[in-house]
Length: 147
Image (cartoon, rainbow, N blue to C red; front, side, top):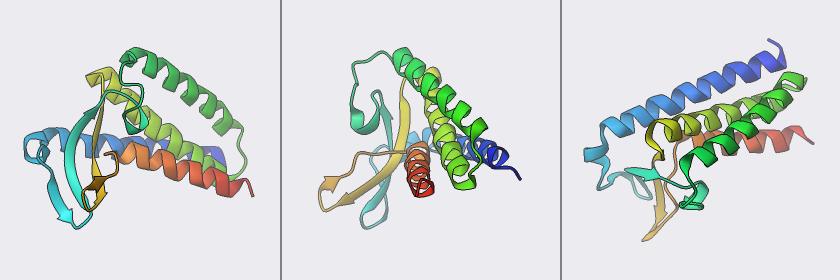
C-alpha cells in the first residue's frame, strides 16, 4: 500500500471510530451526565464543547471554527497526497480523520461531543474525545517521522 493510500485509509478509520464513539456517548448522555467511573482516574462523561481545545474560544461562532478547521484539513490533505513517508502519512491521516470528526459535530450540533474524563484526585483534565486523541497521536507520529 502506498503511503498516501495508507493515510487515506487511516483518515477514514479515525473518522469512523470517532463518530461511532460519539454516537454512543450521545445516545447514553443521560447515563453519562453525572459521570460513570471506569477505574480510578478515569470516568466516562457527556459534555458539549462549544470552543476548541480546553474550551478556548467558546464565544467564536461554530461556523468560523468549521471554516478554519476545513482550511487546515484541505492543506493537510494536499500534504498527505504529496507524502512518500508511511509514518508521516499515517500521522496526517490521524489528524485529518480526527479533524473531520470534530467538523461533523460542529456542523450537526454546533459543538463537539466530549466523553473521556481523566483526573487525579479532584483535578480533572479537560474532557476530550477520540478525534482529539487521534489528532495528538497523529502529531506525535509526524514529529517522530521528521527525525
